Length: 555
View (spheres, rainbow, N blue to C red):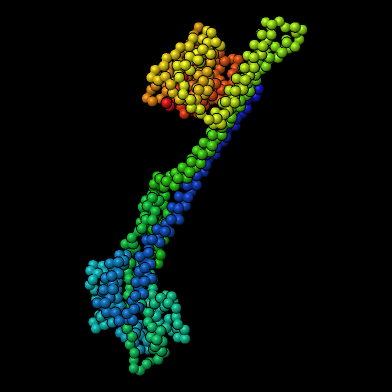
């Protein structure tokens, strides 16, 4: 039976160890996979997050292009140099990537104009040209005036947008309202580092323009048509690094830029700028050690969650093992208890049976034999009764099924009565006592008697023949009754001190080979707790043991 229990114990332990090894291996594998996942994720982020950086960085340009540039149309062609100076000054202050602005104060006429685009009866040419920006944004530099003798050399921007205007008017369907997108597309030109915009005429004006292309009107109409050319500097775009822990350095480079250094210690990516900046790109570069920090910062929370989960699994495993271990110990204790209880019952029952058989088989018994057998039967019956009463009392005390009596007790008489009863049972037992500070107190005499009897029996049982001595001390200390039971027995090993008050627990020694139920000290512990007191023990091997009991003093 012991071999089977040990085998089961070893099997449980092996299963637990195997399980911990397996989950530890899975934990390490999970950490490895999680790190690789984190690395791959951050590497993908390094490539994909550049789009967000671009979006944030060109937000001012989008606002300028979509909202600010179309404001030119609000003036309906009646911008002058002073009004344009104020308009441009605002743009240069708010949008630093606009380096300068060229203003064409132009007109559309039904007759040929000097230095203009003349197509049939339709003419488009500048009256004057001003430049803003570069050195003094608030002031203007006059580049051309029709009143001057200097001939105007039409640039690509003016020619291209003028031709685009003429072509649009020629193909315009005057029965339909053109869309804003169509108008914006045909009245603007986006080139490298430049946006040229012609204010959008009203639909009625566009209808007149169409007539002017076909015939000469009378009187000959003249319309004001403003054109602005915005020169842009991509290097003045403010780069907003939305991932500073991912991108160590971001700069604007020409599209043809190719770094000379191709060191493996760095990682890089790039994205082309939109619209007029399409000849340039955002160039991202970071040291691998810098990116590794971001990988680690992403990996660590995952690792912590996995570590927590692993810790919970290990804790559950340890608790399961502890529970199995406790169940194993409880099974062993209960097994020993049943064995010992069987032995305790078997001895008196065997004696009673032998005595009964002797009486039954004898033809006649002498008076001496009758008294002897009567005494044997009486003593063995008392043993059985005492054992049953102890088990019953322990169960009642443990389940609080009885009430605590409150009787006044003379402590000296009580101790002397206990000593007398034990001397009758064990003539070689030397018991002494001393009482200090009180003579009576209120308690339950039956429970206190059970407590004294158990401790006295233990002192006698676990003492060598030459040192079967017990000294009982009763004192009043700080309003409480303190009892000390000091013997000179074999003592209790230190590792066993915490186990002696457990149910069914027995210390294996030469005085305990025949076994006991293992309830004596556990019963004492329950008794003291029921009486609202405390019990402690001090012991030295081969020197003796001292039990200390503290009970409330009631008088």
